[in-house]
Image 1 (tube, rainbow, N blue to C red):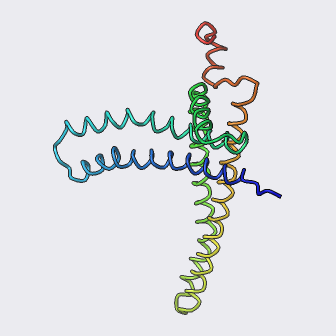
Image 2: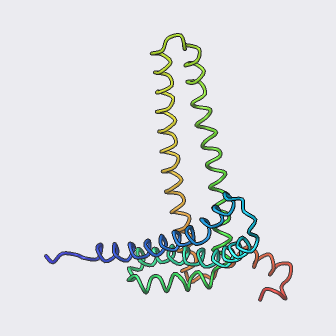
Image 3: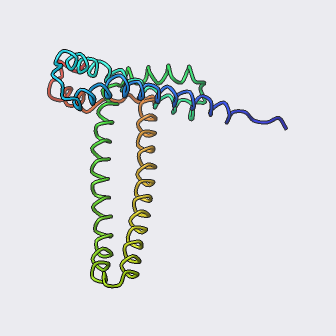
Amino acid sequence: MAPNNSGLDRFWSLLGLNIVNSLIGYFFLVMVIKPLVEIAALNTNLPYYFLITVVIFFLLIPIVIAISFATRYGVGYVMIYKQPFKTAFNNGWELFRINWLITVESALAIMLTTILYFIIMFAVVAIVFAPFLILAYMLAVNLTMFQVFIVLGAIISIILLLLGTAFYGAYYNLLWSYIFLRLTSRTPSYSKIHRLAHKHLPSLAR
């Protein structure tokens, strides 16, 4: 039986998309974030250079975001439709271009959900760790017991963090997979802004 190379083909396409996304991210850090940090750290009176950096910052943000979502959607085209790297990236870009408002809305909603989730998760971890910390200080006269309770509390907290992060990572990927499948389905999708405008200002949303 001849070997099946479809998995390897998908691997190289996924690798290419991830490399593009990573290069854009590193370029953004080096060309924008790093100069802004240096200017702030030096505390120099260079309003001209600061202004240029800020302008570049806001010019590059849309480009970085667009390419990031294009590669994210491109991964969907590779995994679900088995498309090669170039075709997947082009289709990902086109999908983002057509549905950029839905994408941005979804990204903001997911970002707020992520922030809320991790706030709750860290609060739960702190609540779980607190009794071990209290017991450790109550038994501080015994160094061994102090260390046992601290280590036990730390281990349970780390396990909770790992489980919570893994759970949300799976949920996060499911959300974006659902968004991708919804946008690529034959049923047209509209952003919340478009639906509100169509309801209250129909002349502006045709």
